Image (cartoon, rainbow, N blue to C red; front, side, top):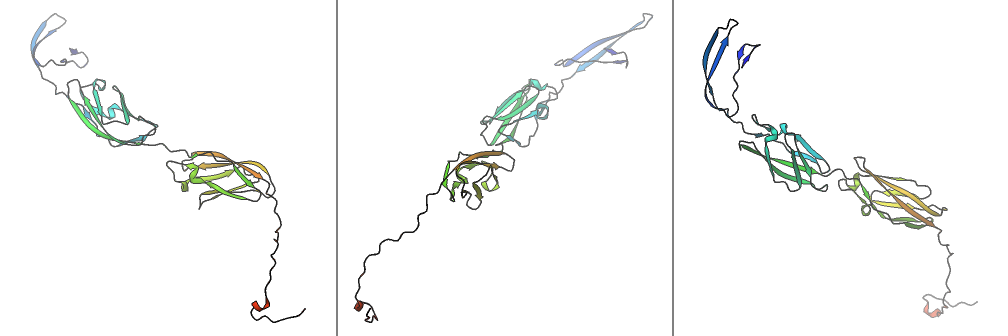
Amino acid sequence: LVNPVSRTLVIEAPKESAGSYSLGLSVTDPDNNKGTVTLSVKVIDYPKSKPVITELSQISFRSDQVYSLPLNKVITDKDTQLDQIVWEISGNKKIEVSINPGKQISFSALSKDFEGTELITLIATDPEKQSDKKSVLVAVVLPPQTPIIKEFPEINIHQKEIDDSLKLPDYVLDRDTPLEKLKFTIVNQVHTSVELDLESKTLVIASADKELGKEEVTLVVEDPEKNRASRSIIINVSESPPIEPPKLLDFPVLSIKLSELPDAKPFTV
């Protein structure tokens, strides 16, 4: 065809049309004068381009997330539309790999509790059966763990008594934060004192002198990521048993001879 703007002859060869051709070109002016010329055209095979998968660095994401990449960031093929590429995935057992043809590739953990790495191999094949293969290390980490506080038993205590039976390691759990890095706060204290002994990791509960009855205090635990958990502690304070005065028991009757005492001297009354 002739481009009327640039006045150039444009010859296009369809795909898979390699060969030699003779084309007739006719030119006619307004006076109907006509000229004809024969063009010899040779169409050669265009070198077929194979798919090339990008060298991917390690992929890392949380087990509760989906990691996605546009396909044009993962593969190139100069003569093939990306939605015509056929994919094969291998090496994945705990990680799901899904491909939206021509658009994106996504990675996700099959279980929210999975943490680990897998070496996943991607194989891309174009319609001409040309292929490329690359492996990528995919790492899955667990999301930040919210602290967990087990239910506390009710504490029964007398007036003026101290209870230290609540050991924090028995009740507070955090999968990704050691106990020493958690922040502990006691709220809603009114009459009963509840304090944390960091050395022994114990909640020390001290009852008031005169107040009786039930009191509910709350333990709040916060990790460095500001994840929080709380749990109530029920404290029952009862009256102390009466304190009896000391009592002297009856002494036995003792008898002893003066002669049995060293340095004893007779005496008269």
